[in-house]
Amino acid sequence: MVPAFRLLLPVALSCFTLHAESASPGLRLGLLTGAAETLPGPLVTALREETSRLLPLPGLEIHWRDLEGRSGKETFDHLIIVRFHGSCSPFTPARAVLPPGPLGITHISDGQILPFIEANCAQLTSAARRLRRVPFRLDHESLGRALARVVAHEIYHVLSDSGRHDRHGLSKAALTPADLFLPGGGFEPAALNRIAERLALPPASQLVSTMP
Image 1 (cartoon, one colour):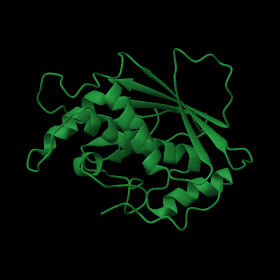
Image 2 (image 1 turned 30 degrees about the vertical axis):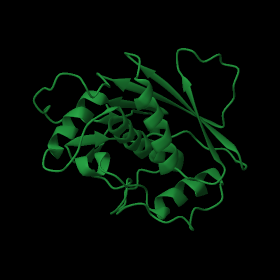
Image 3 (image 1 turned 60 degrees about the horizontal axis):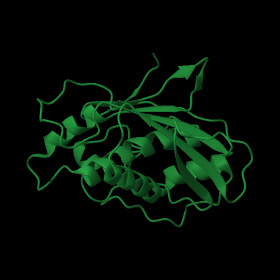
Image 4 (image 1 turned 180 degrees about the horizontal axis):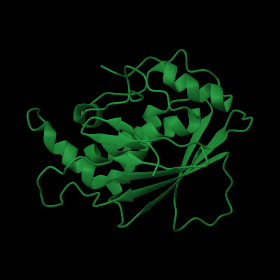
């Protein structure tokens, strides 16, 4: 088991990477998803839209494909496998808040971070129950957006080939339930530029942070 970057909830997120080769505008990032159960359509839509919002890098094309149904005929400049564990339905009968555990985790082999993301939906819905003091309703859309923020945090580490964290934004080492579920939120331009530099994409220096 590899060391994990610990986040508040408590949550642990670790990073992994694919070695980037020289890229050109129109770099294709393939995200292959797999889950123990079929993900609800509205959740999938929110997941994909939020991921694109969080990674507005010029020239980066995000392509989502189902891991089981992929034909193998497509090619991507970078490929990441994303697996979801636990029930990803916001309507699962309420349980007590889960004990501390990883929200997302990846592994390192021989010093290299591997291109596999695992996200735990049960831990995520448990984190949502900590928002009882603010107006908030857990539904497919809000759970999908929160799941996207977990996935995007990992993608940042993968594509930047860096374990670095920042003091603000989605690349900080500790995220609260509010960071995951409430409106707004995003990466600081410096974090996005680490990805851009690594992939030889145009810089994101003109982007304005979406953090409140």
